[in-house]
Length: 256
Image (cartoon, rainbow, N blue to C red; front, side, top):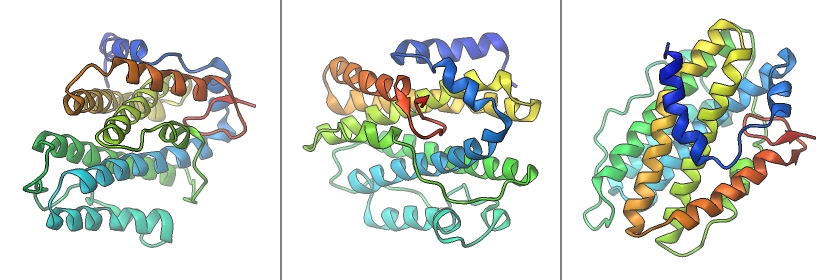
């Protein structure tokens, strides 16, 4: 378990990056035992979607054709489970590693660094998916598909539609989603039972690194100062978090 001072060290840049902290009203709702089920189901799907976003990103921009197929094959068991009611926790065991190298396409303007960072992120998100599934299994919470919250869609709707700005915006959005996840895990952990608290604290280090990786890549690809664009998405993100929301989910706003 990460020590308290290490937690604060991890959270300091994240709290500076985010333009608002999670409202107390959301914490109050999230603490209710009857909301654990929806919290875990949504967290599970968020892990899969975070992995998918990274996978689609490198498939579109960076990898060769063989690697594109390898990435789809890697995700298939998880997508079968989540969307097609195929497989089980047993069939997903040990599937978070990819057996083949993911290679850049020869004419890609983007570096292997983009691929390496995203592949590591995917491995970790798929491993977290499995861990959440284990926790649900232990608690007798059956998997069911639930609709996504407004959060990611709300952020992505502000992306520019011309390149390379679309890619830069995608990376900035990825940074905000990972940073908010990290902040919420830390905010929620003190109110959960010991096993759940330990699990959420264990996720902080990877989520904090994911946010930094996304931001670094956005800055590298832009090759210029993008602080205004980052601040713009910060305002959009803060509004989604601090305004009334009809649905309670892991990334939802103030419960209406």
